[in-house]
Length: 236
Image (cartoon, rainbow, N blue to C red):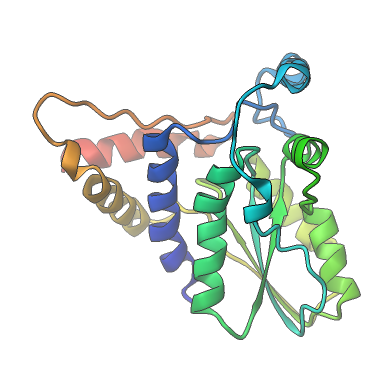
């Protein structure tokens, strides 16, 4: 299954959309060691919950993909998540919808790795999104036999490692489990993502506009993907 090939173009376009429309996820505490701010960031996010006065879009337009009646084949799309409703629908939701179209024999379901975002959306909008454990337990309860897990992660970082470790605990729950790679894994991935983001921003190529792509960063060795992407862009 050429999941990552499809995912590369979709995720690149989605990241671009979020960057250009300034509707990416609200700064929130990461639930793993990748968030170097730790408890301070979590406290800030909690305080923001009480003072929230911005409009993020209609949550009812987003499909949380937490339905039962999955069938024997499931494609679980795992993302960090975002509390911005419009961004969630137009980026993560768009990837999920495209995967469902590309793989009609699989039921696409959603899992978020950020419990803080899950709780925030549920508290504010009443929308329930599964975390990874809930999504996997749902698959087991529905009798899924063939499970494909495709993360929308940029790199093989700490959250991707956590995902692999959690899947290992379900090795006896399914007949087959396949885990897709993060977006930036092979040299070819870097070239494809570069081509996608350059093409998506060509209208801004006026000799006066600079575009800066910002990443979360990680303490893992995979943080080197940022340097490699810069080198790929510079060389081209």
